[in-house]
Amino acid sequence: MFFRKRMMTLLIVAMCLVGLAGPAPANVVPYGDRSGDTIDFINIREESATDEAPLYGNPTINDNNVLWFPVDFTAHSVDGITDETQGSLKMTLRAADGFAISGVRVTEIGNYSLSGQAMTAATSASLTATLTVGTSFDAFSAGPYQGPDSSAALFNVGTELDFTGLGLTQADFTLDNWLLATSEVDTEAFIRKSFDSAMVKVEFYTNPVPLPGALWLLGSGLCSVLGLRRLRMKKGN
Image (tube, rainbow, N blue to C red; front, side, top):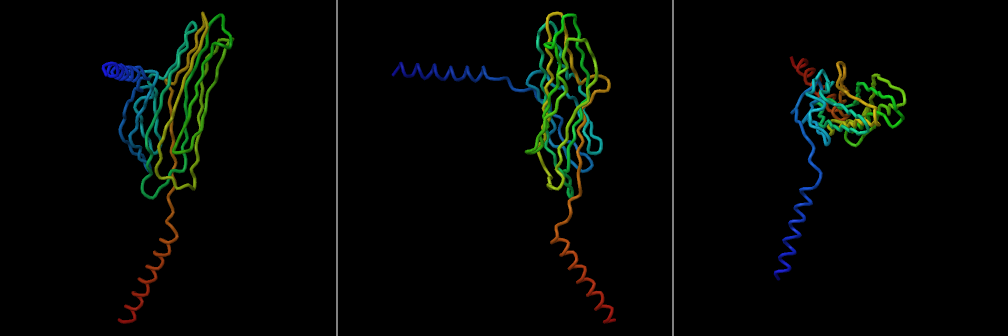
């Protein structure tokens, strides 16, 4: 009996240690709720499993566009040490009464640089991203930008999803981003979305929702009834 109790105690302790040794929770920064012209953005937040958030920064709402001006979204590799930065934007989209979400477009702007005397293709920088809205998703990327030549330039990438005619009024939104920089001895790779004109721009499109045919018929019927009543009242006079 003592042996069994001791084994059970050791098993519980081991399970607790496994739980403690599990993956660390992501850093989460909440931004609350915001409203555009015809879309409400519910529970806006960003998460990162690799870096201290915020990476995207506080959003700015303009009509149905949401703009982020990244504050520290970078990956920087020197002398063979790989650097990866991951960040996710999440929220719930809710169309205003009488509207449906017809499309979403994402645009990301940034820059990169590669330098060093002994560069090969192993010195590189890249961006990969996935946009998910409801059950629809698409991936986009920038790079990989690779050696052996030193270089520095801007990138401008993005994607869009079309929901025209689907009557989508509410959906979960996620934008996942990864920046990756790799280097060799005496080389350096750098990529970021946080320079003077950098931004992540998310544009949402809506269409008015047409009234169902039954409502049109009901409205026509009511108009006819009212017209007949007025005509009878005039004749009665």
